Image (tube, rainbow, N blue to C red; front, top):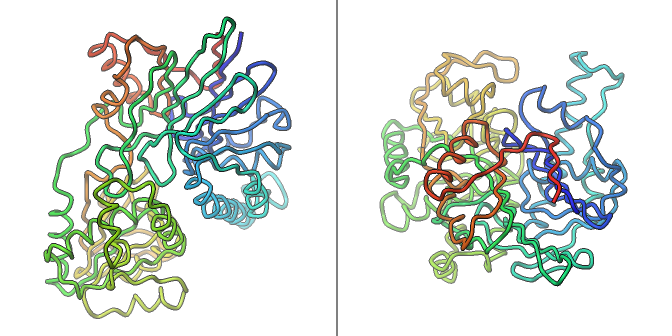
Length: 463
């Protein structure tokens, strides 16, 4: 008998953690941080259900914080085993985990200032130093190369097409008589037409499928993203304004640069239009996207062999220092500024909001999901003013949305990925809000006659 414990991302899209207990070994698959409102974040402070020192190793599907961000805390509590991940994931962890630690320390300082922490002084969940220490435990495992983690238990990474280094996991467990149980953990599945990365590989034949359901109840819009972006930039340029794009530093910024490169190379936008990348993390991630060319899809690989590289056009200007970022507020000519954070909660983009929002010449263009309660969501919902750095800033700039950009497969894409199965696997739906899980469960039943389970937080399945 062995067990799988569902420790996160059950009815939510955050905190992915699944513990496999077999032969007195504990293997953790993903180690995500719970993100969101205060109640959700409090889950990170709950006692871990097993002594972290007893965890043999962690297998990561990718570097997003909701899949990797609990690692520094786990290390702080005694975990000292290997963290198996792809080379691309290991590279991005160098950026994302220390940044997460710095944010934890900032939150603790803010709690001290406001006096709402029960601790004096307030304690961070983990620190930047904790994050840097756990990075030393990363063991890089290439795609398609099986790795035995304990005798009889082997995993293989396959391309998931979600972000650089992202994978889904095939795990083979040897049973008595030489037979195997095969598990597939989808991680976060990307879309078939990512502008840079290989599409998700086909799901291998499996006995058990742990499937994400982020968009399990909906389809992505089919709008022409290139045409919509071109229109917004030209419309704003005609007013003499700047297009300010709050963009996630990893993948969304790089994806937008490729779309912009398409428009410049096709002559649909003037090559003299400056594009400023005002995010040190996005610039570091951009360097990794240039470096890991083995993850490129065929079309982008062909483009990358030409000069200049499509992610490094002459009118793409990196902005690393604070002085350069502040100088963008004095621009007098049309431009595009990509800046973090993607939901306008913190980061350099807030400084640009103070200068751009009160001016009707400019456009604030949203290119990603805006969670409830964030500054981006309040602007998108039409609030006439928002608070930035303690100031009430009027929203007079144009507010626009670029739909159709998502790094997650929608319901039809999930279904297409999961279907090459000769027999029905046992399906566990995770990483989705309850309506999304229910919608995907109904679709699997209707189209494939597959039953599926929607595990609760903390549920244990014994096999």
